[in-house]
Image 1 (cartoon, rainbow, N blue to C red):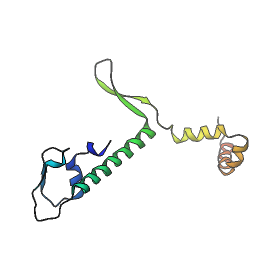
Image 2 (spheres, helix red, strand yellow; image 1 turned 60 degrees about the horizontal axis):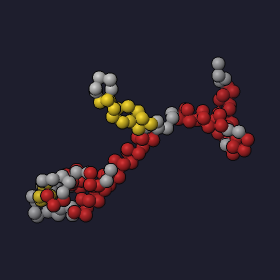
Image 3 (spheres, one colour; image 1 turned 90 degrees about the horizontal axis):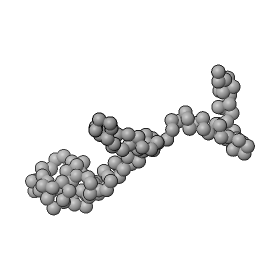
Image 4 (tube, rainbow, N blue to C red; image 1 turned 135 degrees about the vertical axis):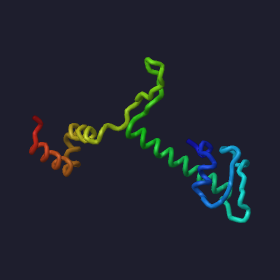
Length: 130
């Protein structure tokens, strides 16, 4: 998402809550109507910077969500309803990641990961798999 996808009104609300204003088109800076003339109001540059910050924040959330949960896309089911179906996986659960790490440790890697290896090995030895 880029800054131009963020409504101007959202950015102004983040910058001030004391100034009266209106906006004719939430994506056109020239349509801002400042109703308080005797107070300092945010500049166009400040508004654009806030829009960019808000877009960056949304991009970070989207990126994190994709990595954790995977990607979903809208598809039509057998009843003609639009549903969101998983089309790509995110990270596997941490337990699964650790298990993959454990089972791939051999030779030199085991030596470099000795503290991890010995801690996990002690637990596995204490509580063997049935």
